Image (tube, rainbow, N blue to C red; front, side):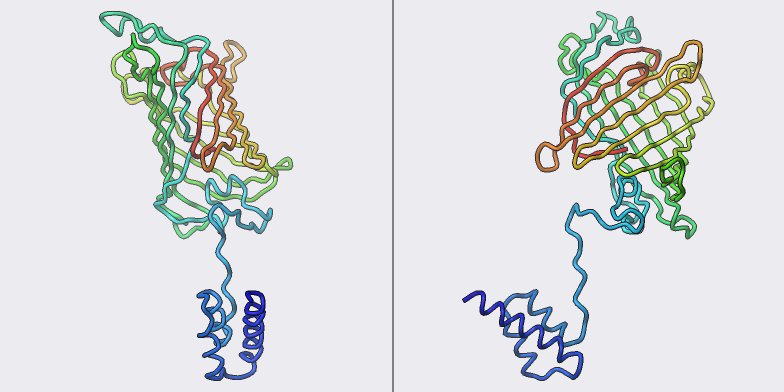
Length: 338
């Protein structure tokens, strides 16, 4: 019984669609529409009588929207809303860098040196295993600055905390937290270079500090230019920076000798898996120093994702800027980032 009624409705819609193009609808045709019980089908029937084209279906949540250049919106386009289909307007919270929780992170050489003498009763005796939490978001302050659709103003904020959760001697305290507000002018570009497509230039101003006092204080301010490239599933980010002089006492005057003058990041996405490689180097022949960070994000359940991160070098956190170690962490992430 269901199939004959369905065929009957389809026949009515086809007939009404043809007659609507040639003459005004009769009262009986309007009554035929009103007899349809399903809301969507009844609306389509009325639209056909009125001569209106059928509505374009909205994309489902999480669906990938077409892009005129590549056929799909790339990860860079979604992250920075570069294409028209990706634009979502101002004042919407978006992920900036990865948001993750690592309940287990192991360090080959915990950095106790800054804390020696900082506690009157005893030294902390840092544990090699701790917990790490990173929260990062950004907000578009202005879309189409000065009427230029290729220029947007963004504000970002990232906090990364290292927690000695398994250290009862240290009162399970937070060993270090780094706070990083940013302001970014993002200019959309479209050019080819060595087989890559140049997608944007990000001109940024960033402050990073750990909010400590006395001998534990670490901070610096930088301006940078970040160039974003992509090729198929690979995104490449090149970011040179310049450290701004400190107005007062410099807590870490040699920080560039360890954290360098910029970074390079490669992000490869395949299906729902994302791999990232980030490199830093001071570009000095003598006393060459740098860092390497590898991460892998993979699906677990629903929006929950697994997250693995490996670090080797100097400056995993500001308090460790001149300390070398290897760390590996395992946990979960809720959002990705670049």
